Length: 378
Ligand SMILES: Cc1ncc(COP(=O)(O)O)c(C=O)c1O
Image 1 (cartoon, rainbow, N blue to C red):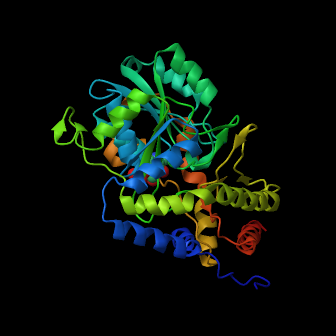
Image 2: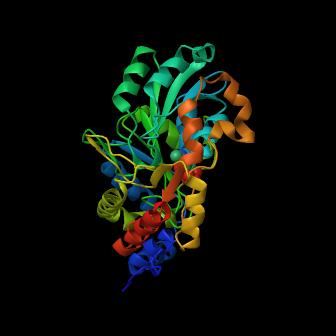
């Protein structure tokens, strides 16, 4: 029991907590796979693919090695490669962008909404009408931090300009947009099962989701050397298979995704109640008709660095997602010249701070964090 202002001992690591919560079932699942002796693309992957497709509300899910490959394979399966551009927010995990480059296409950076941190339709419109917009073939909407992007507006723009709308759902498993699960709205979607994700493996993993059977088939072939038939490559594919052991673990965890997201939302509500009257802080929002998955709980605050240092001194782990937008990182800076201005992105980067949030965090830990933030501003 925590009293007064002592630091609760509950700022625990989510991946380990998530394993501990399901230890026996995970060990049984691993044993089952080990003793079956079928270690690559066996029945665990096939069954998980069906279960995950049904969770996302799509006809097909294809297990791949990680979320970056899921984006690359989607693009390659759609022939969005050399000579094509893909619009993507610069405010995202670098993987959204590196996957586009790996597919052979060129990223075209787009600005984000200053409150939801997801792609700003007005900025996409600007990008479409810019000189670089002529090569645009697809738009990769990222449901960043778990908040669904403005899919209706983005779809309107895509339909009007013959662009393919894709979703990067690496941070948004279980988020909903007007009653539809994210991942079921665009032509295709990518998911990551990196251990910290809302649905996390114990290692790398990823999936593509789609209702398009031809697209699903092509991704399935490309993930394994372009084989339609064993040992005959009809396409230039890669090796990107979801591991059988990871699929077995994901099958144990999938039934807990909805209750875990609910728990994330109830902890978010405690932050909301405890901090929303503090003017220096811009709180995360969940826009009407969306269900936020709260993968991360990201506030905006001008005194970000000082607050971060103070919270560290009080034993509270925080992080910056991310310390630089992708166009500000040396590896991708050259691409920035082709993009429209990104004023919202550049303004938010020095102000964003991720507070502790995961389903195993106690209410006391959240309250302790709230008290520490209030102390900082008092
Ligand atoms: C928004 C986003 N896209 C893509 C990825 C890539 O996923 P992975 O790490 O499984 O390759 C991540 C993971 O960090 C992500 O957060």
